[in-house]
Image (cartoon, rainbow, N blue to C red; front, top):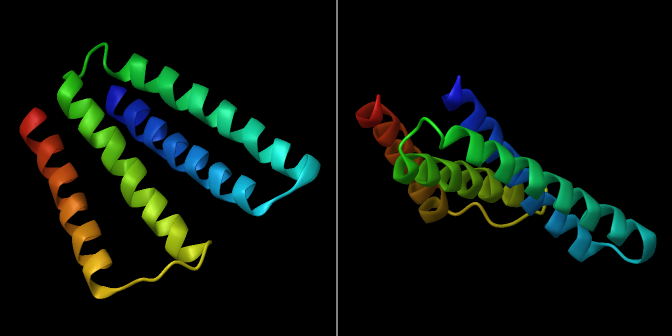
Amino acid sequence: MNWIILIIAGLFEVAFAFCLGKAKESTGNEMYFWYSGFLVALFVSMTLLIKATQTLPLGTAYAIWTGIGAVGTVLVGILVFKEPASFLRIFFITTLIASIVGLKYVSS
């Protein structure tokens, strides 16, 4: 169950990065809406990370949490914010995913 909580925490990390990107593109009240979303997503992500690390190894949980956030944020950048999807970016995202899977495998 705590692995699922950790994955959800990582997805909320992607959400707070997304909100930062949208806030950067916005002005006025809309900007404050996105910053509020950032704060909510940050709080949820950190709370779930704390819950997951009560039973999972801290180093593994943190690495997986940041990995999910990094991969998700890069994908959101490519798909939503029209950032470049070069071969090397995709290659290194793939190696990061392989590392996350490896950490999960050796931590079971």
